[in-house]
Image (cartoon, rainbow, N blue to C red; front, side, top):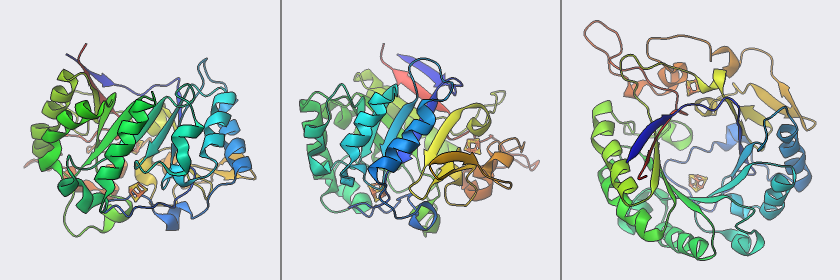
Length: 335
Ligand code: SF4
Ligand code: SF4
């Protein structure tokens, strides 16, 4: 068993490209916020121009990685065009994040050599636990979609977004991901954005709740041969804090042209860049870029500003644990 902290890659560009915000589901914790992200379905020429804006930059061999998202990206009829365009432009890897409904016969229109991973989302190990969060019938459709994707020879990931609503069921996920033939299991932490920002009950977990459930589940999944990745969330004393916005090269693109470097900023017009006439341009102050260099005792400044319920303070008024950048991950593998 190998466990390691995956620090930010300074030499790799990761593009999280939301092609549209429309979706067939209405998940309870959906982070998409059309008022901030737009309602457009991007035309193919815009997709190509925006992909090209990153492909030609001074990047090391291997190219950037692109993750196509929505909304539900398989609702976009030009998703196969987007995949093939990314490959033609030299992107190093292509991932499609999907809720599993796999519209427009996407599995018949792209090949395993073109899509590195189909990444599915489930928030419970059974219909009874998943569907109250993601919608009636969502578990069955997603599980069937995963089995079909594996049968056609694609590599797959599964994302489970942990909140107070479903952490009690997390320990049953390793058996499911192994049974479904999943290659990589991502345990994600709920972000208080989009619909979650309006939730009545606190969704964030304390360090104790997180540490009791997540690392052990990751080990169990890795024991079953499934590489498991989860965010670090809480830094131990002496562990360095770094902000990915300052040291890494991630871009979160939305169909209204906003481009963020930090996912926690996505509910606000703080984007550091924007597409204007298909050119990527930095925005004038004040943006997220001005926040990345701030030092606060709580670690991540955006966590403190928008979702501080995971911070505990000692009697001296100082935070007991600093909050890591949401992009800092732990990886557990069996080999
Ligand atoms: S599948 Fe994704 S985009 Fe669609 S409602 Fe659920 S969380 Fe939102
Ligand atoms: S989550 Fe926090 S630490 Fe990470 S990029 Fe955003 S502001 Fe920086």
